[in-house]
Length: 277
Image 1 (cartoon, rainbow, N blue to C red):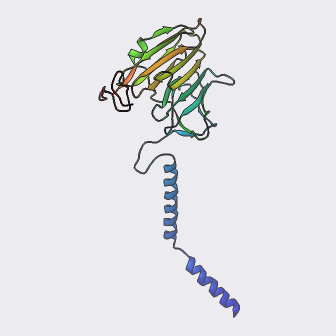
Image 2 (image 1 turned 180 degrees about the vertical axis):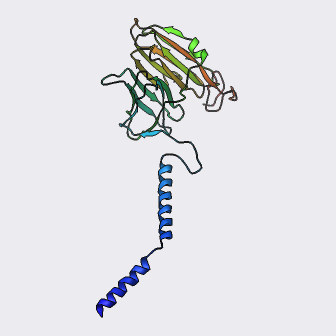
Image 3 (image 1 turned 90 degrees about the vertical axis):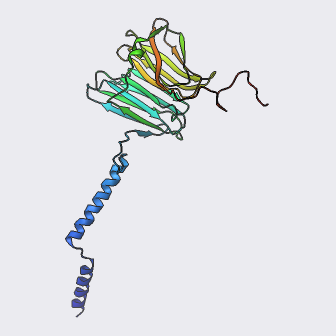
């Protein structure tokens, strides 16, 4: 008697929890589609079909690498930015074991207002781009390395080079209507050691780039420096000895013709004007 009752109870419970095959397939398909949606959303692709954000977050003190085995990749563009905090990073090009033909140290006061963008030559692969955030853990940076459709210097930039001897410097002031400038540094095959500074006022460095390249002809340096506001001056210093001159080209890249040239309250200082003490 008890055996028959237990079997009947078990069959009743099983019937209560049984799901039709069509309902089970529908549930599985819904779960799969939701999981796929979560995975796609995590890579930066929204349901509206927006562009993919390939940048990676590099926390303070950590290292990220991008490797390219194909010898067809001869140039890559490195883009670094923050959410308005300072940016302090080391960028290295690794070409084989214990071979670092290019090193860049970059500091930016505001990585959102002035993101770092530079083109690094990568001939004779395989090559690896290593980006290390040497800032504090509270200052993460967004890093992206692009291997297609990289920025190229204009004909004006390539033709307007000026020689800077070793140990010398040259300054390039720009109008407030210039939003960004192109910087191209190269040599005749000798090593390239330089420091690029963006100043906005006396001893007020907004961006500093320290550069080393083992061959300034095979691996020239090209960057686009953002110059918002007024009073921007780009200073190029050849930190190499006098035997290693270099050719520098610094020309405007983008203009903002709609910006007013009149001084703004809290902005430009009017020399000789009246004020309240």
